[in-house]
Amino acid sequence: MVIVKNDLLELWQMKEINLNSLKSLMVFKTLYESDTATRAAKALGLTQSGVSRSLAQLEENIGMPLFMRHKNRLIKLPEADELYQEIMQLMGNLDEMKHTIVALREFGVSRMRLASAPALGFAFIPEAIARILRINPKYSIYFDIMPSPDVVRAIESGHFDAGFVTLPINSERLIVDELFEVEAVCLVPANHPLASAEQIEITDFRNQHLVIPNQPNLAADQVLRLISQHKIRIAGKTEANIAAICSLVANGVGLSLINPITAYDTVAVQRDIVVKPFRPALHYRFGLAYRRSWADTQLIHLLKENLPETPRYLGPTPG
Image (cartoon, rainbow, N blue to C red; front, top):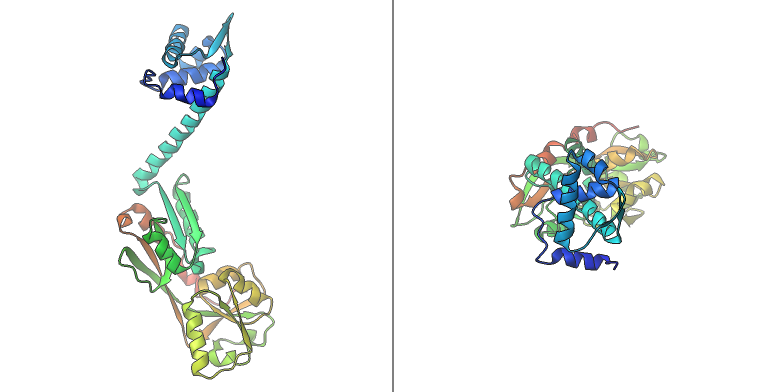
């Protein structure tokens, strides 16, 4: 009688099955791969009779034969095929458990669900993650990009463990460590008349088209207030996801005010943009938010220690 997988699993769950160690399963696996008790015994460093006894005990415990004996060869039954697949899955789980234990020993946790505000999420935090994984390639990280308020809610709800946010944020349930502060910069199309200016001032926005984030953004809010205060008439504005802003500027749509981390990371691949200082200075502050239970984990320290160096985002216009 052929026993399908569900039947086999039911047999394994029966109370009379008593496997006290993984040894009999490893003997079976080697037998399955070797086809003869002689080759299996040699591979395992056991006697042929010891291998045969182990197989007989396994078959007795699970209540069904796994091989047909024909002369000196073992012919696999369908039940053996199913059991072999289950053992291979078990070995994979054991291997994953080994790496988990190593990560627990080194980091205090074995995996992390990490989120980031868009300002840092496209290149800055991925570089930090890469640095951590070079320390331990088996560490597991789930990473996503979302607006800062969503990052906070995701951590508070337990869906994520930590996240990088634009400050300020308010949360009584999380620890928030301020990391660094940078000044907003202005993105200018390379062929724009303002591309040769040493810096861009608020009055330079007169009669210009602006490209601004379509999500809450401190610098964008501040510059719109400045435009209103100085009674500056702009030609118009285009609202877009931060991932598309640099491409819009490169295509000549208009000027944009953005944090220098996103700006310089994008200019590395977008050659039709120049980055200019902006006055009056507007600032972005960034922080790391995490659940209180993560406060003393080695991974939080590694996240902070492996952030890219911010001074490289404050230098002269790339080009």
